[in-house]
Length: 120
Image 1 (tube, rainbow, N blue to C red):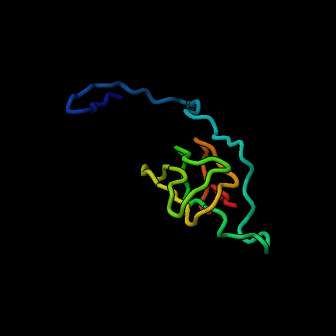
Image 2 (cartoon, rainbow, N blue to C red):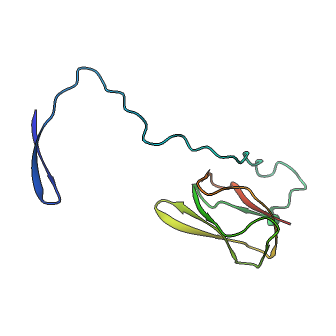
Image 3 (cartoon, rainbow, N blue to C red):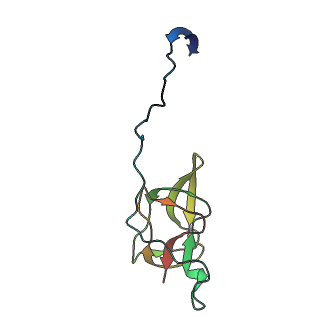
């Protein structure tokens, strides 16, 4: 079958054959793997202090970390950046404190409500 396609205003004639059987394609990306263990479900422990964690507002990928364990942060200080729906999302601390742990690494795919940073 002959087709004509236009790319950036330039026309191309192409010939396409109908494949008798589906062609298996190699995946373009390997599965994203994290060295971080899954976080506990919200409300799993009655003594868990939600004010001491910063959670992901939506699903995305961590692109930059601004803090590390032991670092003191102020309220509204930038903790990390994530990309979601082709937008850069700034994640800030909602309270002042010291960073207890950073639960994600650059390149990690995160879920909504996943714990990103724990404060002391």
